Image (tube, rainbow, N blue to C red; front, side, top):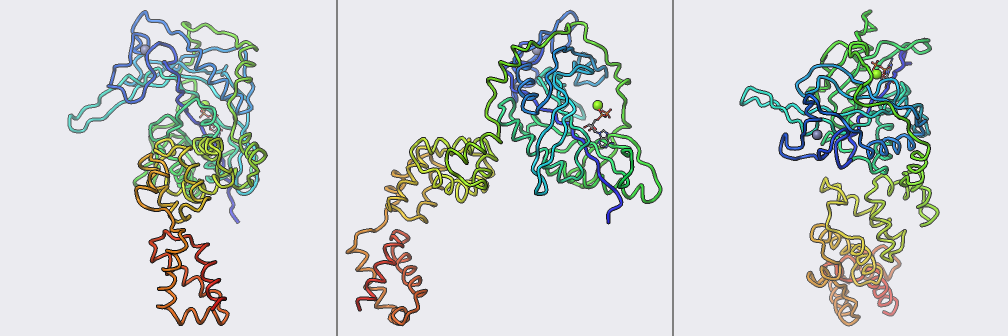
Amino acid sequence: MNKFETIIGLEVHLQLKTATKIFCGCANQFGSKPNTNTCPVCLGLPGSLPVFNEQALEFAIRVGIALNCTINSAIKFDRKNYFYPDLPKGYQISQYDKPICSKGFLLVHTGGVEKKFGVTRAHLEEDAGKLIHDPSANASLVDYNRTGTPLIEIVSEPDMRSAQEAYDYLTTLKLVLQYLNVSDCDMEKGSLRCDANVSIREVGAPKFGTKTELKNMNSFKAVKSAIEFEVNRHTQIILSGGKIVQETLLWNEEKGVTVPMRSKEQAHDYRYFPDPDLVSFTIEKELVNHVKSTMPELPKEKFQRFIEKYKLSEYDSSVLIQDKGISDFFESCVKASAEPKKVCNWITSVLLKEINDRKSHIDEMFLTPVNLAGLIRNVEDGVISNLAGKDVLKFMLDTGKSADEIIAEKGLAQVSDDGALEKMLDEIFAAHKDVVLQVKEGKQSAVGFLVGQAMKKSQGKANPKKLGEMINRRISNV
Ligand code: ADP
Ligand code: ZN
Ligand code: MG
């Protein structure tokens, strides 16, 4: 029996995809030439004044509503003061005691049950620039394009009790955020970042233990591994009579260990104070209502709708909604007049695997919904076999051509001409007299062998169902 209980709280930073930065008109764009998306405001030049981006406010409210938060009416921004070369102003504009959203929760399926994880707060802040270390020049370069891009920080309650629960929370949260359409949510590009706070305590202890904060994980899997490593490290220290030091550690992916970065600073170290350049303001009820009335559909709602509208099973629906792009693609196929259950089968049993193999995403494929619907029609009408259909799909993914085009080009249409099939069967029956005899004596499974031979001979172009019927007919007539 484990003597200790794990306590985890997560801080998620999400880059909002507004057109411009949070306090100036510079483009909020990833991948531009370094230091081209800058101006006196985001470079912190003297005399420049920030102007708050309304789009960022709407996005933050949208996140707050989706996470069941209270949207606070009295809002202000605060300066978090510290020095670092990627922060030209010497302070970060953030929110300290009056965040936009507070006291929400997220329902998460984990370990076979649904758990409610509290969201303490979600506040807006600006991002810092980016340091690029150039070992060849023995120098560090700084790119201020990211300086002043809008972030929302979502802070959870210390409610997770295992690395797996933290992982499931993150996966669920990311899906909700994707559906909200406020961010790319791409951990590799850094538009979604996660810090994990970890502590352990003896089961039944009234208070939490000392926590450590983990940074530098660049996938959810890494978050899980880092937490597991840290729980183990805490346990060893406590079992050997030591004490946990409150500090921030960096996850080293290659070595699979956490490495101390700095001892933990306290809020007062930052000398938070209200930003005098940004007056406090009120979020009007009308704005919140407007955002509420224009909320995109959330994953849970889509899950329910797919079951009701398309008569899909819970399982099918849950697979489709796991990826917003896939669920939209599914609906477009149905609109292109394909049968929902058939589309679902093609997506879940063939398409998803192909996309996975390519380590890609549906949005990056040339396949269009109309073309997948066309492929399904060809298979249903018996123009091509199911097997050939899978091959056609592969070509469609990479070329964007229609099923009709590919079937014609590759000569994949099934041989359904009875004369041609009968002739082929003559040859097969002659070559495998023994098997034919077995079938006659009642060994039905041997029919499969004969069908297989015919499929091989026709290079997959024969219709197996039809072949089976023809073979049985022949044998019963003999
Ligand atoms: P800090 O003052 O270090 O920023 P906060 O109280 O603001 O700490 O919490 C930051 C994050 O750490 C939150 O997600 C919170 O849930 C989590 N947290 C707080 N205390 C603990 C603890 N003892 N163990 C694990 N996580 C914790
Ligand atoms: Zn700017
Ligand atoms: Mg804090």
